[in-house]
Amino acid sequence: MWKRGPDWLMQIEENWPKSEIEIQDNSTENQVVVLVAKTKERSELWERYSSLTNLLRFVAYCLPIVNNLRKPTKLSGLLSVDELHQAWKKAISLVQREEFDEEIEKLSTNEEITARSKIKKLCPVLEGEFLRVGIRIKNVDVGFYKKHPIILPKTHPITDLVIREYHAKMFHPGINATLYAIRDRYWIIDGRVAVRTILHACERCFRAKPKEISYLMGDLPKAVHLELVGELSSDAFLVCLRRFFARRAKARAMYSDNGTNFVGANNEMKELYSLLKSREFNEKTTNFLSIEGVEWHFLPPRTPHFGGIWEAAVKSLKHHMRRTLFDTLFSHEELCTYLSEIEAILNSRPLTPMSSDQNDFEVLTPGHFLIGQSFMSVPTFDLSAIKPNLIKIGSSVVLKDENLTPLRWALDRVLETHSGEDGIVQVVTLKAEKGIFKRGVKKVSTSSDRN
Image (cartoon, rainbow, N blue to C red; front, top):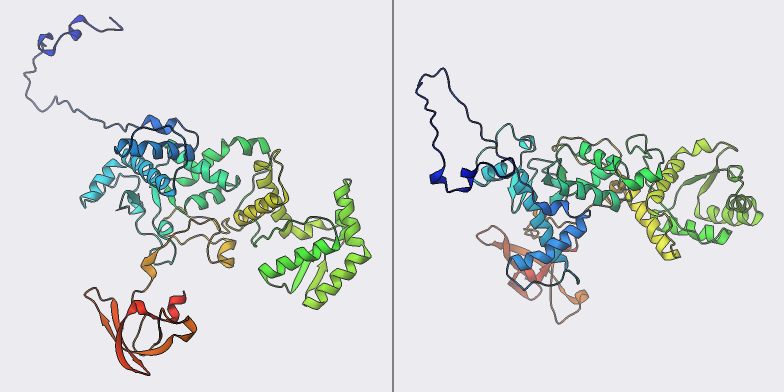
C-alpha cells in the first residue's frame, strides 16, 4: 500500500470511487483559498560539469545535432570560435529562461515588471537573446557589455561556474577583483555575496593559506611593472632598467631598498647584497642614470617598512603565484609570459570600492591611467559612438586612387554634401585642380579615418 497506493489507482479514472462529500453551505464565511505555486525546474545539465569551458564544449557539440544540421558525432575534435560563442549564447539564454521566465514574457509584450521581481531595480531590457541591465552609465564611452551586462541569478550552478572561471583566470584574486572582472560581462544579483561564497570554498586559496588581501584603498594605489632578469649582474640590471624606460617612459626619480635590507641567510639575498655593494654596479648605474637624467634614492638602512608601496606589490605578486604555480617548471619565456599576465591582473584591480547600484560609474583601475581601460576587459566593438557623418563642408579630403600610391593622391576640398534618406552622407561635391565633380564617400579619406 505504501509503495503502490490503493488498487483503484491502477485502474482508469472512470472507475475511481466517487466522493460522497457534498458541500451545501454557500455562505461566504467558510471559503477555501487555493494557492498554486509555480516551481522553477532546472536542467540537470548544469550539475554535470565543474568547468564552464567543458559545459560550453558539450553544448557546442550538441547544438548541431539538436538543430538537425549534422549526424551525431563523437565529442572530440576542434571547435571554432563561432561554435563556442553560439553555445555560450544558448546556455545563458536557457539559464535566464529558467530563472526569469516571468520577466522575459512581460518584457517581450512590453508589459511592466512587477515590483516583487528581484531584477526590478536593474531596469532590465530584452536585447536579442539576453536579459540585460537597462539604465547604467548610459553615456559613457565603454563597450556594450560594460554598459549593459547580462543578468545572472544569485544562486545557480552556471553562476558558480562563471565565478570559478573568472577567479581562476585572474590567478585567484580577492573578492573585489573577481567581482570587477565578472562585471565586465555579467551582472550577478547580490554579486558580492555570491562571489564571497565561491571564493571561501576555493581549494587552492584554502591550501595556499596566506592572509586575505584587500583590494580596496589599503591596497597599492599605483600601477605595477614586472620584469624578469636572467642573472644578478650589472649589465642585466641596466638592460632591465632600459626596458622599463622604453615601455613606461623615463622616471624623474627612482627609489629602492638599501643594500643592508637584503642581508639574509639564503644565497640569493647574499648575492643581491654583494651586487648592490659592488663598485662595478655603482659606477655603471650612476653613469647610466646621470646620462638619462634620473635620480636614484636609497631608503635609510634597516627600514624596509619605508618601501610599503612596492612591498604591497610584491605581496600581491606572491598572492597569485602561491595559488597557481605549485610544482610547475617554467622556461624563461614561459615565466616572462606568466609575470606579464600577473602584471595585467594587478593593474586591473579596482582602486575604489564597487557599488551595488547599476547606475554608478565604472570603477577606476590602474589600467585606466595607462591605456584608458582595464587590461582584463573583454574586447568589444561598439559602433554606436562612431559619428556617421565625418565629412563636413569646407574640410580637406584626399581622393583615393587605386592606380597611385597614397602619397600621390590628390588633395581636394568639400563644397557640398549629399545625404540619403537616413541622413547619412553618401556623396560629396569636391573642388580640385581639374574642376568640380562628385564622388562617393568611400572614395575619399579624411584625417578622422585614421582613428
